[in-house]
Image (tube, rainbow, N blue to C red):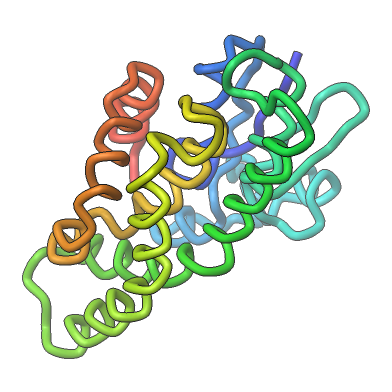
Length: 223
């Protein structure tokens, strides 16, 4: 039985989506971010605090104190994109790489998303999470992040001009990984509308029942 440590309001969403698509048996062990407890006025070190990223029990599993973490037999694995690549290869089937070339391409796109897109996309996500009414300082942050994302989004746009999906002409774990990175920039409509193929591809990915079920549960989870 695969155990995933984390919450829906974290990068664990990409693993939950993948696990649902792959049909693997798994369980979620709730581990909340310490900063979310502190925002509620709860000391994450208190004996009565729920399992969180500063709990001694969790830190023994993940010294970095970050979620998600996956445990499968004797394997303990962190980094959500790596977890998904492992899960797909374990499960096999159409979401997994069919050969070494596809595996390399899936790794390439996961690294590209993590290094060239995610940080700036998160800047946008954090800004919109504070509300739609932007003060000038926050608008400058969003505009600067969107400007920096123009180049990697253009790479995706060019790729999607000749490919229906990220790898192999079919929906795979590479689409899950990239879609969950790009999603952080999704609230900024001027950016998404500028890259129409990226927007259409993301909409297609997010129309899948496994994503929609995961997202419903994420919205239901207390902030």
